[in-house]
Length: 345
Ligand SMILES: *[C@@H]1O[C@H](CO)[C@@H](O)[C@H](O)[C@H]1NC(C)=O
Ligand SMILES: *[C@@H]1O[C@H](CO)[C@@H](O)[C@H](O)[C@H]1NC(C)=O
Image 1 (spheres, rainbow, N blue to C red):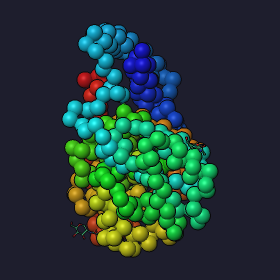
Image 2 (image 1 turned 90 degrees about the horizontal axis):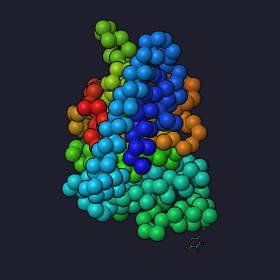
Image 3 (image 1 turned 180 degrees about the vertical axis):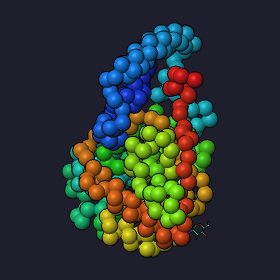
């Protein structure tokens, strides 16, 4: 019974989160595991674990009952079912940013190309040489629908990931890294969230800008990692490595945004995602939307695990807010949850 299996996974993930465990191999994981503030084997924690276990049994029994009832009324797999009112054909494009990881790229393209609702998969290619023929054939072969395309760029720039795409047929763009797999049903749910707020950035990886000295007079900011978001439930950024954005922001980023920001991104080889968050926040005046869902990181660690990363990210926050003349990012604690998949209400 796949539904049960999923429930177990979910509850396990919830328990892990509560107890400072990792998020099942998410990019968020390592930081979570290292958290110093959660004692893991105190009696209170053990009691908590036991209470959770009881809840878990109760929920499992309920689900079983529910599942049996539903089976009598016909199939009801949330994975297969489109949300009410969703259109059956291509609704959004997937734009995959990649860099010299061909095996990952093949897997990722094959995954997204097969998801319902995906109109086309665009691979943003910034390597000096065009895609090698075997890769090209392999990637184009992984779908029968012929909806995969390489977007070739002359220069290697992090800004390439937001270049407007010729022939883009949808308003919604799902921007994702080549090592992130978002399950199709989760992706579909996030798309539905985006449809209800198409000018917002809607994504899975939240971050926060914190005032370094909240009571001081200077406005200096510090980049808040997953940890600080987990601890406070507050965020103001969703990273573009797994986010829906409206196509109009690609044009704004590339053609209208302050050139000094794109220049900064090129020179520092970092923070294109923060730049996009600033752009959207400044244009809308509202926060992004964090969608709850498990996503899977299939590659090894990238830039974000390098030492000094968060210092660099803090510098970007301060540089960009100086260029804007104010801090456009807006914090929130709102999170979008699929009510078909939440069991405590
Ligand atoms: C791609 O698919 C075609 C037709 O199915 C097949 O003949 C060809 O060998 C495949 N190429 C690769 C690289 O897998
Ligand atoms: C921020 O938004 C305002 C209002 O829409 C706009 O006039 C301004 O140019 C934007 N700032 C930047 C730096 O893009």
